[in-house]
Image (cartoon, rainbow, N blue to C red):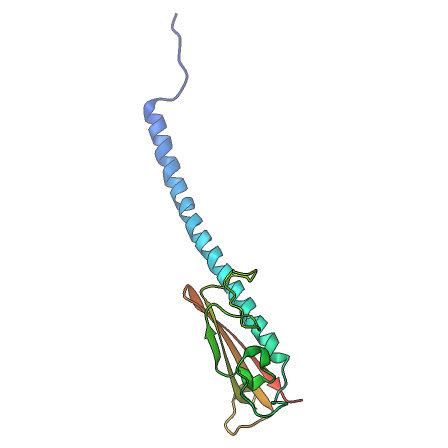
Length: 163
């Protein structure tokens, strides 16, 4: 009796493995790239949150110093928009009370990030805002910049009006 055996030959198995590796290699290369892009997106989200947090704090202050003289030393004492001019960069960023946001004492961990603020008088020229050529004006341009070594800076700009 002639019994036929079923199965794959060694050559067929080798060919299948080569084809499978050729097809899967490009797909496997995408995983580290996707992971890196996900980490970068997280950094940008965290930087944007830091910038928005600072911008909202500044927008809640008076346009001009309600008390004289100007020049408060600590951020918790800032009472007008100008007090924030040239503030920073601090790494890790601090909350309004001066506590470092470094993951200790219940604070979120923003180690590696830095925040900086610039405040300048602004004016509208046509339909574009720019730095005022003859300050003071009734508008101030506030720029909050958040930096991190592993990404480009995140910059938020707003105009605050004296109303």
